[in-house]
Length: 423
Image 1 (cartoon, rainbow, N blue to C red):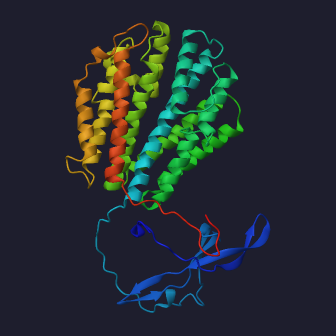
Image 2: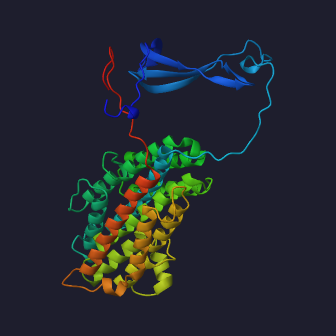
Image 3: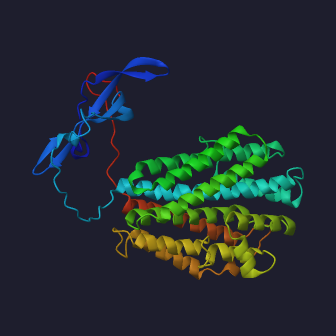
């Protein structure tokens, strides 16, 4: 009554029933047949056949095409003796906010799954070498990386050694109920993809098949080496998925997907640095830890080529925060994000996401890495504050982006009707 323009009511019809084979038995089931009309000249004609849906209350649980066979092969399709010429014209259909939101989160979930997989691979490699030596430099580095992984993927964490490492990493890879786990991200990623199936090529869904087969192998094989092998296969599937989305038409949907990927990469690299390099743990531990961070961010070779020497905090932070040429750095991805946001129709050059991104890029450019890394006791407070500030600013950008480019009407809510159950 207060806001009638926000609601629409639709009376549920009395559904038909048909036999359905389920669980080896035939049972009556509510069904609906959706029919379609075909524009023909200046009028519309009903099409033969349609789409049958099996219903649970008012919700469709499965659908099948209904075909009406012709009496003879030479009988005209749909009973149309003449097929009128179709005028072909090119048009660009604007995407609705719901589609853009699915594509935005598709990019974010894909990047989140990739970053988690890379961290799992680094942690498992350290575990193979140091699980039996928990108090060695490598063992301490392993605990730090597992702590970073726990912050990224909340869940049960056993600080012990031995088989607990494998169990924890298996949970990160396979437990779909564990928030931000690889399985959880893949499930959300597939859900987003199903919502925009018409925007994606079939190659995207081939990539999903590769990751699902890798997960099934891990679930069936309890050998420790299977953790690395399955994680690598999952990562290969994700990289193939990135390649498939690169072939999309570069319209606002693709720009939104890439914006989500760049934003998530920014958040992930800042979170990883916050949990690993803001505390000094000794030269030997830091050497293992810094190398692990560079490997997890796919920047080890870049660092070796760029700095040609021992990995120091200064060079690591500069490469991953401020380097405008490193595709894994914060600065590079902020510029990428800014470019994709500017290409969206709702961007004016002064929209809130654009202003926030301009301020954030200016902050990164004004910051000198040498001022971030000084140690006080065992911590680097300047680096801690800087990373915390970056996280807050990035979350504001995400919120502003959603408000500007993904805003849509409230989600529909089902409510009870006379003679029907409430959902």
